Image 1 (cartoon, rainbow, N blue to C red):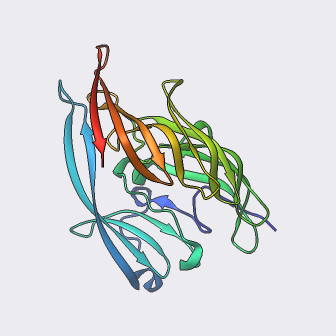
Image 2 (spheres, one colour):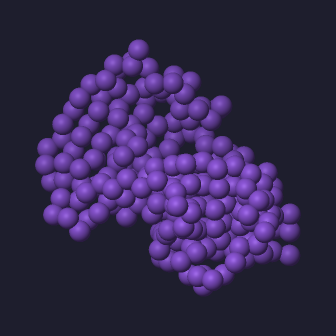
Length: 242
């Protein structure tokens, strides 16, 4: 028997904004196993020049799921799962916490199977997702959002998985153009020439790419940093990695 899911967990995962405010959490969910604090950058585009706003939040892992809260305890979202050893995915970007949902099926043993897709703010992201094997491993070609994906940084990574690890050439796509690429070796670590995005890549003031070389997962030699302003020239800087 298969179980349909609109989330990245065995049970229903949803933004708590849609739940009644007086809904009580189960005692199971209140048994906290660990708590981590993160800081996320939110861009306020109501200004003439969009402004960065830093927001702190906590991720609490409980026996019943993962709870995302503000520092004062207000709940952003709860992701349910039945087994803490399932190694669930953490969202560490506030827009992802609010808008991102996975859709797919689970087997009776709570392992993902078949085709999985992703929605953003209720809309299906074109071609994002991929295939899980009968043993619940990512296989074949996948299209994934970048780590810092948000409304103002809609870039994607495309490449192949073998038994749940990245392998071979992966490309980075932004505005339907390839802006980065690099390869993973047989040990699933970055190796050789790479062009990758900065951790704060953003369409207005931070279109930054880094060009250089990895050796067994470690940056080596000279790295060139390219910065492009929207509609303007590209600037290049150099960074020497010792």
